[in-house]
Amino acid sequence: MFDLGKGAVPTVDEVRGAVGALSRIGEGHDDVERIDLISALEELKCSAEAAQAVLSAAFDRSQREAEARAGVPAERRGRAVAAQVALARRESPHRGRQHLGLALVLRDEMPCTLRAFRAGRITEWRATLLARETACLSRDDRAEVDRRVAGDLDALEAMGDRDLIGAARELAYELDPVSFVERRRRAEADRRVSLRPAPDVMSQLSTLLPVKDGVAVWAVLSREADSRRAAGDERSRGQIMADTLVRRILSPGEADRPVSLMINVVVPDSVLLGDDYGFGWVEHYGPVPGDLLREWIADNAEQGVDQWVRRLYASPKTGELVSMDSKARRFEGALADYLRLRDQKCRTRNCDAPVRHLDHAKDHADGGETSATNGQGQCEACNYAKQALGWTARPRPGPRHTIETVTPTGHRYTSTAPAWTVAERGLRIALDGYLLSA
Image 1 (cartoon, helix red, strand yellow):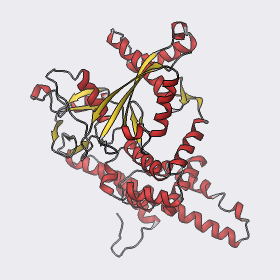
Image 2: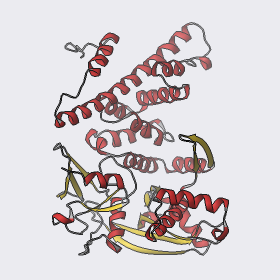
Image 3: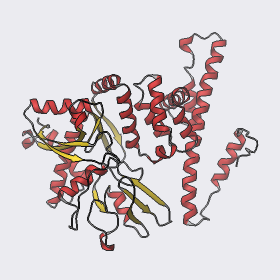
Image 4: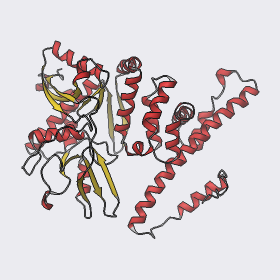
């Protein structure tokens, strides 16, 4: 599509010719080639978005230089650049400003992320996540996060969105904990509720809450849904959660009673006791800085909320949590708790959905054991997809728990359990209290 034999830069006509060539892709392929083409097109799409970012940054610089030569005051230069980028990309001016802001940050402060983006290894959204999570840092610290997170292209490409956010946050906290904490406190002041129209005469009610409040509300609604589903309620889990929220706000009744709930937190003991900077992990949310966890636990202690601690152990070399087995057909009890704590989210590569199903990697009907080794946490959609014809999965050797999934076209994908490498030992904190009282 492009004639780059002598390192020439593609012209506008050549790029538009490539669009025409892509428009002729039809169905005349076998399934293996179709999947390979989809993957190659994804790389091309990411690389094209990166090229747009490079061009946008260069356009901004050129426009500012031209305006300077024309005598435009410095504070007024570049005002129309984002609007022009938005028009060219057929998006709103707001999105144009976001695109331009990302382009400038990548060019000036995050060269490793830009390199990965231009190589088609990450999407524009993941480049945005890295830029967003390092916005509180100095230029030097941001460059250090960029090098450590985006310097290894293979590792970066294997990360899901939550993995990427967690890695960037932990490094940002390590490099400048004061700025990180201050940013978090400023964010808490921006808590709010918003309402937007949704398709089919529905509405989207959203809340932005501090993590301890958001996790508590989610835990109460989730427990209510699980309880009613177990009792035979035919509504979906999401429907029950939505109905419970509406009922408790509009018709409180018995909901005025304090609601007892359980929230699982995994945190290295050195972080919990304040000896080290670091993060813990909150079930249903993800990584949370140690200072917030200590504040949260202290608040509960002052209010008389019951708390209990169970010690977990991890390998000092791999960070993998100690395993446990069961001879039951279903993953239950301590083994179920262990799988959820070990996997944290759906184990399908690049899926960040919450764990809803505990699945046998190798099907139980095919001799798969009900064990930590053969178990994995999955969301509903990924678990159902795995049951389709031609899908197989199995545990495979590795420094940490690893599952290999083979799709019907023969393509192989691996996922590895998150590592707990901050400290050899961790503590599981269960907060059993009254965090949702009217």
